Length: 103
Image (cartoon, rainbow, N blue to C red; front, side, top):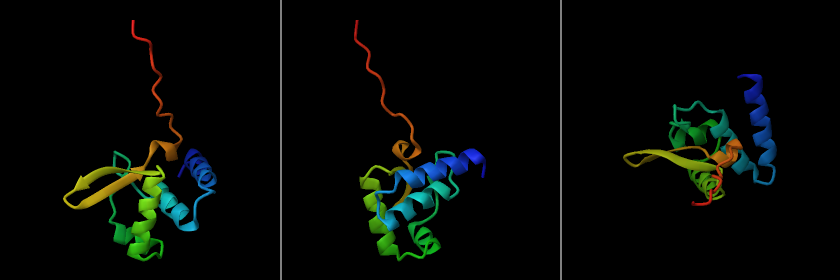
């Protein structure tokens, strides 16, 4: 992990200060877990839940809350399995496209 990665993760931890402990844990798990080229964590929810000592139902409910608040987004779907990644909001990316006047 580079110094930039550590700084980004510290900023992410600070940005999630208003969330519950479980919500922060889910966000940080997605931030720290290996991803594919699209930024998606390709691990099952059951494995992720076990990794942080959370029951699968609690993990699923918490992840849903994190998705609804805009911190995670669906990246890909393979049959009935959905893969998620940090959203641009979580990564601090500017996703606003400036409008131009039509001429």
